[in-house]
Length: 325
Image 1: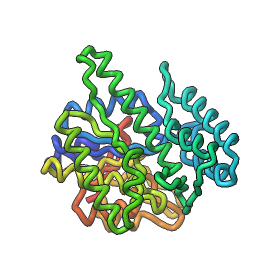
Image 2: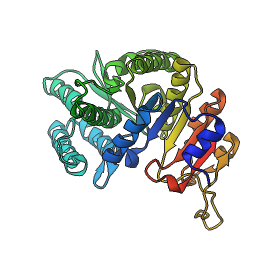
Image 3: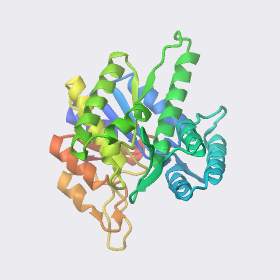
Image 4: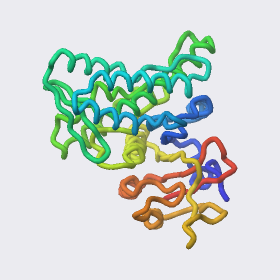
């Protein structure tokens, strides 16, 4: 059983840039998550792709999607009550001694426009709900992803400020709230390239300033079905490779590395050290994934561009890691 660091050493990528993808439950472990990323950025160019928080009663994406159903039938007061409930849940579950960021400010401003009678409509597919106005749009699930990014940015920069380093910030958040409508206004065929250019520009600036880059798992061109944050992590890894000129590792941080399924629909005792891209595809089935498996769209994109993926639990390195290459 090889660890994350063992794999990097064998690949000759010990000091290579890394893009970490934190799923909802991993991202919710804010204190160890922040400490882990802070250590990583001291060693190499580092970025993190964050999903919406998911811990206990706080299931941000699920709650936001339910909120959009109320919005679609005009129940603005109910939506505002749901926002207050979610903010209280965030403070209780994630506060850890300090106030949390408010990811709902932009959404609340849009709700105010609805109250004032502006024309709006809700567009939806299986995993997304978009609130449209004539001059802007807002993905409701993206509010949760952006909220995770803002909270990590706040916590990381507080560490730097408290260290007495002249209030030098160490983390920067990708401003999806500024770019979202511009991305979505383009033809679908152009959205991916435009977003990729934005990611490259953002990562280049962050690396120049020696800052950790924080990116929401939701990006408009990827949000066609579940698993979009895995795809975003691969896209960010490709962008990081472009701006640094160095092979970049996509670290998909999950509770477990990849385990083989057994006939009883469970998994064997030992995780897999290595999978080819084709084997990683085969580990998926119509009922979901074997423990630790990355979304097939992300695997396909990684294979197309030669991005190695490492699946592991950053908070428990003793569990091992699975290399997909």
